Length: 179
Image (cartoon, rainbow, N blue to C red; front, side, top):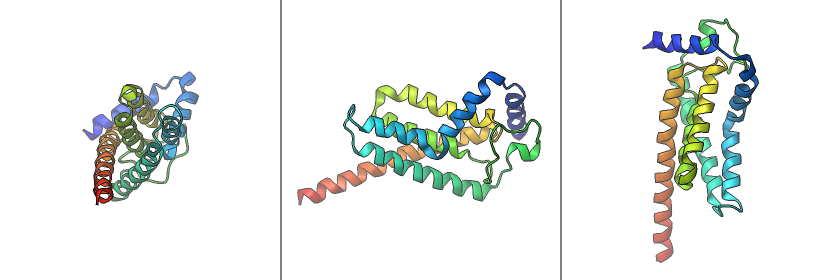
């Protein structure tokens, strides 16, 4: 499995299309620290949707996803692709953290899940954006495909957990108000 993972990553990097490089670099930067997701949440929680807690929930999701993926990276310690084979060079600077799971993919799929649960009619574009961010990390040369897939799965679980915890908190708050 590891050999397939390495081979797929090498194939993607070896077949980059120069005209797409700036676009996928931009997408990878937009996904950094959940910036694009927080912006989307602010827009969706604003005038159009009147959901004031959506931005806060998304911000909390970003923090949880960053913490969980960061802890997993520290624990698992997988080297990034350029440390195994530096040619061709990555299109972005090499992060100091290890590779598995992809933090960008974890945050992207966690936030896509939270936002899709709040605004179901946008689920396909939200998950398409999350997949594009995850793929961009492979394309720019700093992750393996399994890093992105693991991050996606972890992110969906985190998004569902945030939704569940939020529902439990709301239930307790309603009970407290009723007393």
